[in-house]
Image (cartoon, rainbow, N blue to C red; front, side, top):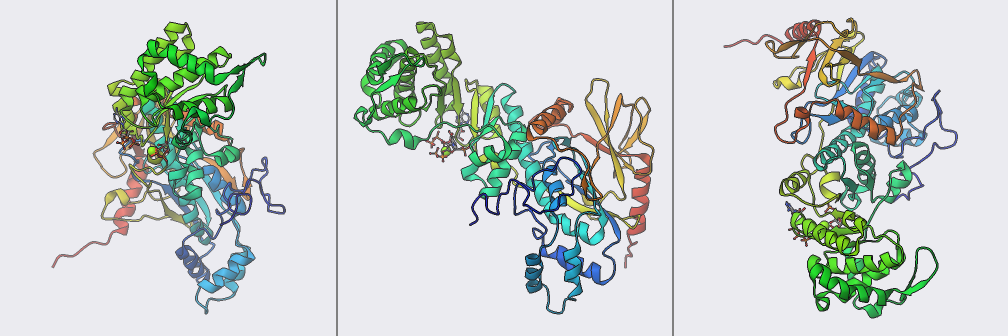
Length: 564
Ligand SMILES: Nc1ncnc2c1ncn2[C@@H]1O[C@H](COP(=O)(O)OP(=O)(O)OP(=O)(O)O)[C@@H](O)[C@H]1O
Ligand SMILES: O=P(O)(O)OC[C@H]1O[C@H](OP(=O)(O)OP(=O)(O)O)[C@H](O)[C@@H]1O
Ligand SMILES: O=C(O)c1cccnc1
Ligand SMILES: [Mg+2]
């Protein structure tokens, strides 16, 4: 198993690596396993057959897109582009890759093919794409790759791998964000449940892009600059049995002026608070109190306690309030509590009600604003249900459902040939949804006067772009009767060229900028496309001329059947 800092997760380019970029040099892929060999064998066998028949340099155009939005939703967040561009920078077969391939391909493979493979780079590739963090819709090419057929074919699998999960989990995170609302803190706690180390790192990165506020994943914090956050586990609480376990009795006040017997102070508040919030001191668990005291001694300025180990209302909450009030005497403000089981609506409201009592009794307004974190198998539906029931949670810690995307574990992005040597190609299917939209295309987003997106329009690249104020006929790509005139208040070309002639063409946004981009892009999408239940589909259409072209090519490419 490689260690981090070894080969698996690299942060910086290796010395001597090609630096194609004219723009500020970026790190190599943040994940060292992203490389030319991270592809399916059939890409390499096709490359050999293309090479053998002299077809390898045919100029091809491929579109990367998905056919259906995930999670029964009607929008998707596009993510993973930066890694795709970094793949362009680093794409090559090393000597050891070639040696390995010699053991995989048949022994009669022409040895000159290996020289050809060794000479390959992505310098002749042009990559245009929608900006990362943009809201995107089915059938719209997210990435269009132009270049020598064999090289583009070899890129299919890694590009799909880099975009599929990134976009899926970013979309999942954005959905959790919409469910929780803008004010609630969302923390990603998924590393222990993620699909391996890389799944965990990707999840942290793209959940942040999708709108989470932080992660518990420390390596992701270091690598991507994501705020790292956390509380403590039940083990910390159960490791203490009595107050005798506390080896240190004291705590120094915030201003450093005096040292207090912190245990005595806690016991004084325990008695006092019993009357204020209503509990029986002989019912509280002494080991839990000891655990909270020791955690507060370690983090007096950031004390947040997990209060559900034994009994939230009879023990955990009283113990938290006890320690928080003792800290207050020393000048410290506690942070809050975490609930990890039980009825999160009921318990969070009960906790809040007791915080209000303490706040009023001691005239400490901040006490009613303490953080109430909820965790434990939370999914999007749980949050919607909690919202309906009413709750007092202001922070969620979410792991399993977020990072594994349990509701839909894969986004079906595909990579399809749409043009070869300037000739448009179409792939037919019994399932009309799977018929490809042929040719090199431009993608436009047409906006209404209030800045919301009305429709995405695909045109052949030779067509004149739509103009603001002009009436544009937008047609459903397949169904003849579905069409609409749109007079856009503004028009945006969605694709930008990111990689051309061996160079990164523009500076890549930081992760924080991508997170902001996602937020802004979601604001331009109408609420009914984003709602959780039965959202309205957003329209993706083609120009009249592209519609005619698709259907002519379709007829040309479909053999006429005979009935006997
Ligand atoms: N008020 C609520 N409305 C809807 N779902 C809730 C509510 N409160 C908790 N949940 C969810 O119900 C599920 C309860 O799961 P489960 O029964 O396994 O946990 P528990 O018994 O509370 O805790 P544990 O088994 O960890 O001690 C969790 O997924 C949790 O997020
Ligand atoms: O539930 P998730 O959304 O995945 O969030 C992460 C979970 O991980 C932690 O404990 P863990 O589940 O490992 O132990 P527990 O079942 O005892 O809480 C934490 O307490 C959460 O419950
Ligand atoms: O910090 C936490 O509370 C945490 C971190 C990971 C998983 N569960 C909880
Ligand atoms: Mg759990």
